[in-house]
Image (tube, one colour):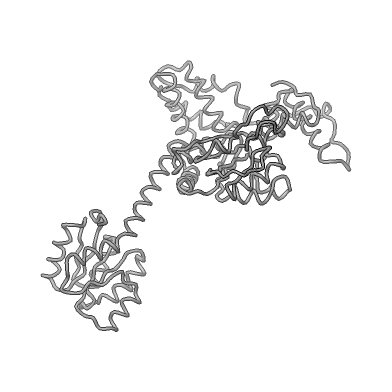
Length: 464
């Protein structure tokens, strides 16, 4: 039988002796019994106590059970009402059905029949409570790992809800905003947690190898394929496939990826036989993938299949409430890794962390905390933070204005998009002193995608 121990039941019965006896019996099986002598009193107690379930006589003075049920439907439509009555006139029963009675128990009441009716009517209430409790636990788990604050709580609640489903998820946010971290958390909270979590950075895979890396290949499928090899997709069987930098997926591979997401089928390179796979796909991009699809740079049908649920991750500079909780979490992680006690983070250090712009977002914050931990004593000060981040953080005022004379003008119109892109890449490299990683960050591009674009345009790569 359904566990009734946590239920609060409102019992409305005008016969005092019967009411006391029924309440005493129910207290043996249920959590708390609230008693009312008529409908009006029951309605007031409902507003005050918010019981889970109502048991009511139909004929009562002041306000009968039918009117009570109508009023309760307005106040708490999810609270089931069970009628206990000696009156079986058809008109009463039809009216009770019309107002949504969950069950009828005939007087004199049979105890087993009453308990069975309560258990059946309360089942949705108990399940709803369990789901809400689980959602609260999962939300708290996500917040503990991703940071606090209003913005992060909204993300945590959405992630906790979708984690239990099989929906595809698209994570969008700036580089370093925590997309990979959130994907791992979602996998860990999902029913697939015992299966593998396979991260794939599509921006780091050369375009000509993307298909075989994802879907595998047979021996001899292409030059250099000396043995049959399973791809990332097959490796993720029963678990989660995380496709980071999804915007870098070559257009030729996107059709096969669409088939994988839609039908859970794929064909290894060089094979004529399809394979089935049970994987959940989480994709991530540092661009607005919907705009990329509209501009024709990404398959629109694939976008909509990947975007069952879209979770945007704001940059860290827009979530000051999340900075300190994240820093404390990284302190614990790094302390465990180094085998030492976590130092305190003094108030000035906390204010310093919150005030910084963090262009590299969560990834940069984690890196800064790891640096601090190398030399930190029992407490981390503002000076420690400054020392660990002095060569990481760009001034809030922004980079110096470049010398316009040393920068040639854009190619004259009419010109191709390729020509404009090449010019932009060259100017970014020149502006950043030839440093590729800095130029990629400034342009909001994945580093490996930036490097491939340089190679495609024959631009000297500059410094690492």
